[in-house]
Amino acid sequence: MVHHRAIAWSDPRSRATGPREADVSAGDNRLTVDQLREHVATGLVDTVVVAVPDMQGRLQGKRIHAQFFLDTVLEHGTEGCNYLMAVDVDMNTVDGYAISSWERGYGDMEFVPDLATLHLTPWLPGTAAVICDLAWLDDDRSPVAESPRAVLGRQVDRAAERGLVAFAGTELEFIVFNDTFESAWAKSYRGLTPANQYNVDYSLLGTSRVEPLLRDIRNGMFDAGLVVESAKGECNLGQHEIAFRFDEVLRTADQHSVYKNGAKEI
Image (cartoon, rainbow, N blue to C red; front, side, top):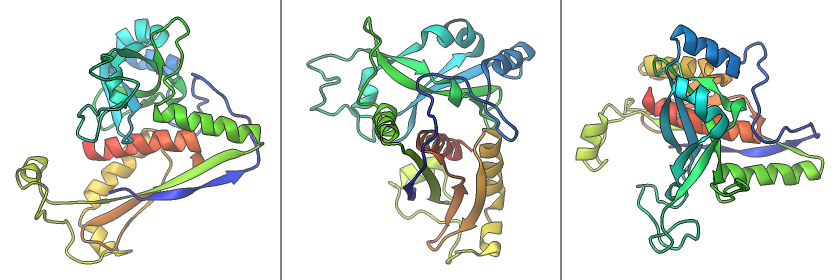
């Protein structure tokens, strides 16, 4: 369960476009390529997750051996099936998409790493991750216009033409259940047991019950480069929220997807 906040606007600032390395500053845990090379050489990192946000805001992709990422994917990208932008929440192919279909066929797209998003994934041993743009495998490597990142990027560019920069903040809420993934599936996701049995809005006692989980999520996200503000209880049974500092809208959207995936993994 996720709750979204509205977009705000500010005075213009310069916006870099296209793949770029992170400008790492104090308190920023993103990686440069040189840092990744060092981590691979010392054995700290052996896997790089390449990921794209899909139409449901989930991260989809694959795990690349870190040395192969440095030797090949860094320059040439990697491929993924174009049906990723034309499926429903259960990953079933959906009719009516021009991008891919049984009639047209299912081909590949190129995952183009955006190096400004390169970061460690502390809750997965030996793992770094990078979010990618999507391009067609044609001579021009034209962007896949339907991808959520491309759609948002066009809006950011349109705002910049008007002297504006879009900022957004996310306040992500979720419900913790005492069930396992397997038992929840077996019960068709009905009759689940929430971690709290009463309204825990701002309740320190109520959040203490799930603090080991909340702490792991907060610290994991911080170590992945997200700026964590706070965690608190909410009104529904087992409901909690974690808030992150606002940022330019594309980075916020990227981090939103990183959080949703990472919180479930943790």
